[in-house]
Image (cartoon, rainbow over all chains, first blue to last red; front, side, top):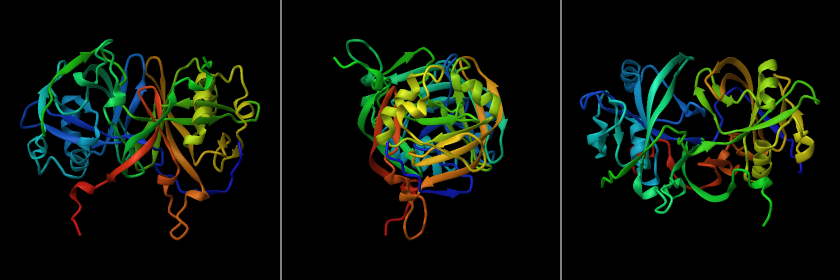
Length: 193
Length: 193
């Protein structure tokens, strides 16, 4: 490869990009239901399937999730982007987010937190460990159930095909659609037919 | 919103998408230098800036990073996708990855692990905590320095503009370019001019 080594240094900052952006729903009762948008989230273990979200203690959902030790990660399709952004800048201390955004809480299977019906994929999570790090606490969680909208299932194989879900990526403070596919995992070593 | 509540349930699985995909470089000496590709990575704290990567103990880089407690996260542009994929499916036990992929290790500022010159952004990390979770151990790290290719700096403000870096997103086993921008953080509450 041609090398370009002209680099500029910056102080430590969070520049890992692009990131996921998801709506996290929580609350054991309709009165407690809330949604927080997070990009500080990810997969941390394959077996058992585990993920994390990081939340500032001053956020309304922090107290709810810390108390109930349950939450749902709801993936974000393009048509949910404005709602996702709004849930990230407004507080559950002031707004009832499901009602205000006219989205639908539906019952989860294994936990009491609600799932967002309009989201293409809902991931039920049970908190295993809370690690205070500074501005944020990390909630490490076991994934206990998954639900996906039927329209993203292959009609023949019933496999989930997320390529049709128009998922949104968060890059350096901006929301993006996914664009052109470059290849599948392993494409660099696949034998040509 | 119009509700679509036809959902199908799946057993617990890692379906948080889309994810980042990065090349992690490590090794204190040229002989030890290696690169591992990870999508199980993310930002865990804003202040101090912290991130994580999760690695299987059987991977070659696991032992190196556990011993040295240092690594570099190298972001992936579209033109690095095939190299990134190759570094994810091939092992450093068998290949010298920098040489084989003809990419350039350059010295980091604060740590001994090498940075990948061709990557648009290099994030120097020092491991703070290693948490065994099952198939993967999570390496939680402090970000100690950042380097970015000068061509992504705004010539007037010197601000980093990652929108031009053609970063790659990993979605359900496939690599994608970022596509159309939907909006900036906060766009849902911005007053129209």
